[in-house]
Length: 392
Image (cartoon, rainbow, N blue to C red; front, side, top):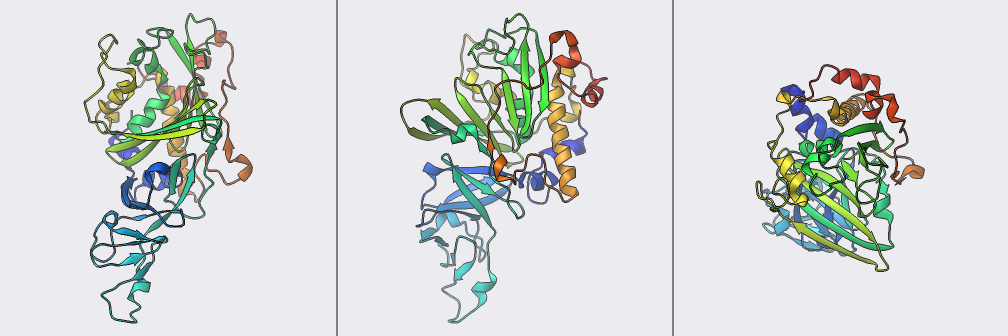
């Protein structure tokens, strides 16, 4: 379990918080290319209200939402060239946030030169607009394999989750829930005894699921390895039938945006984008499912119904929760690195390491006969941290 102070440390993402400072060291999706036009749009990332627009040159610009004059929201303004003009008094800002015009000020006034809005770097890749909100120099944007693939159909869906980002991130590494929450949809492991293996990687960690009674313990009902990949910033990659990445972007302390990026090999070369707005407590029903909820909403139900911020001081982790322990340890390690003036985990500065190809199989798998320590795939330190934890 975490103390109340530790829980707050890991869940608070706004400006001036330690976790907010950590997460700002990574690139995050801020919109989808198809949604980003000359009409300014309001976005919120890591507790900051921002405005995003595409200028005449085609470049995207991301800056603080409110005009420095009287705090009117600039998404009600208009784009002029590669600048944005406030609708209240006509103050004009360029893409760097520098104020260029203040129409009501005296002729020859230099006051505009003193005014600059906070602005952030952007990059577009594979249909997603990414923003970087941290200190310079910015790291390289990770180019994951799913995003680099071009020979097929790409689909991007943006969906909200009514819960803190950590609730959803911990769901990535909590693979023991697959046998129960999704057990009806995937009968090959539904209600079966499952053991687990976690391993650190340069991009984050791998989760490996081993299914009792299945001839090939690496193969799921879809015919791909049951290896789930977790990377920092918080994303994970699914299997090989539907090749997908899910980015989890903290909006603020109480909400998260998911960017589902799916790739389907095909002779076609198309890309689609959509938004899916969901409400807390409203889940797509499926009567024949064990829980009466369609598989597409089961994870969201579990994440949201822990509470907006999960009550970790009163949790009771078991040995099967080693992935959660590992992920929290990685977060603490990254926070410590920042305090030392270093990059956190998984930051890329070497262009030769920018392309990331996720492996399809575990690199550390051993024989089952080695016992629980193997099956859980944990270092001795990680096992020791759970040695006294009940299995509840």
